[in-house]
Image (cartoon, rainbow, N blue to C red; front, top):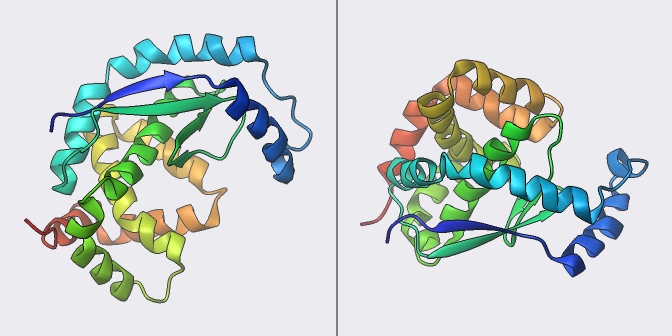
Length: 202
């Protein structure tokens, strides 16, 4: 199947729940939650920004992972504040770095590729290999080693080293992501991609 279309959605109910949930994270507890108008305006801003890269990023994710997109459309729910995650695809607004929205969305879409129907089974041998190879690391680090290798490929192919290095600086605040990025840099993203792709079932 061809690359899916990403649609950006605002859900009042979902956003209201995130407004309550996010207060359980200390780093957000005292921050003002963005208004509905702010979120909708942000969606209108990032739609054309994403559109510039959508086809090539989604096609490259498929090519570099040896996996295929199954869905024709993926809804991305945009909320005021959240810890971004892949299912349901959920993104907060990033007012400081608008283009970082694209980078975080790409991260979550690589996760999406791994979990789409049939892909978990096709990649099973690859995951078994990585879980054994990095058995001393925790689960989040192990999952993100191949994911960050794929993301490094996309960063450097489409956005350049300066933007890639910004990602590395931001990730120093998150110990598990920092650890997985350190492993990717040490072993080389191309080598890790090769190991993963070699174990994808036909």
